[in-house]
Figure 1 (cartoon, rainbow, N blue to C red):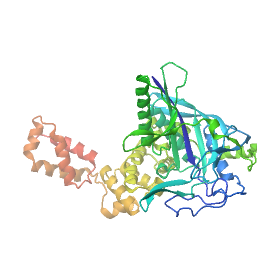
Figure 2: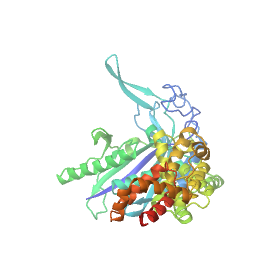
Figure 3: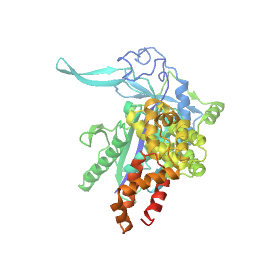
Figure 4: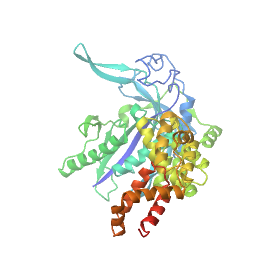
Length: 482
């Protein structure tokens, strides 16, 4: 059997106000319930929505980044469905004439590159938030309409994906584009990016599509991958027992690692779509579209290829660096300041030591206390032999914690590396004299003792002796006749 998977991704657009009114966009942790609601997003009779131009522009940026054909004229529609948390009883969305269609996204998998087709990109409004609780021991549901009317961009792929790995690669690549063009923060824990895979199975080699299930509102790549894998196994088990797969909407239970039935899946006609009478057609003038096109940044796939060509990085290193635009910017600024240092060395420090410090502190690289030029200066000291690599790691950690310049920390702590051959020779002679039996054993054939001697000399030099000089002097003296 072969899995056939398409993804619907709902991205909250990074506007200051809602899709059809001037209410501010806030998140639940930032404001009291129902404090950012007006007659428009509360669904009062007689109110008129107005399209948010910035939301449209974000939609255009994403559509162009996904190589979509943008419609000169698109239409908003009413989707009639009972949303308890959408007061007017319908959702304003786009249906048969969306903002953009027929795009593509290149993804990287263990089996190589894959081109995934994008069916459509359209604008709509979000619903509110329900909280199911108890008051006076009675079950009840509370509604917060702060989120009602927040602009969403829905991106629908064709069913071109077949494995959980491909699904994750597609979602990761799309999230990177959303962040690069500034349309969405990508903060999945806050629910600003919600992923819904549609999964069906068919006999290998068949072109027909089986009955599909949709898994709603996944908000992490781990959940996406696990839920997809589980649903493939669940459907395969049903089919192997001769049972049909029902078309339905399911939820993901992270604790049990299972999908659960939510409702039988509706068809498009169940929503009774019709053109929104209170909104005019959305017209995208050619000049506006071209201005948006010219404002697009270098996108992740193109930047990755450039990093490989310009800096000689591997595909893996380049992919790690370009996944976040701010990380790629940091790397390039550091590389520009670090003349004469191998780009691979800088990449290793950014994706290794610096990422570890950022993750531990819970910081994005934009808030990193060590700026790119300071990191380049630190790596320059290592390259010139002024400090050891081990010392540099400690200096970076202290600079990260204190905000001090690395050079100031090196000077204050006296961490300059000793490369003077005469001084290092004296250290080595002291160690050999104090460990004459081990020296004799080495000369008798126990060459593994070399690393032990090296460690003793480095400790004697308090880590400041140049390791390359130490190795050469130690080798020379161990091979001298006693």
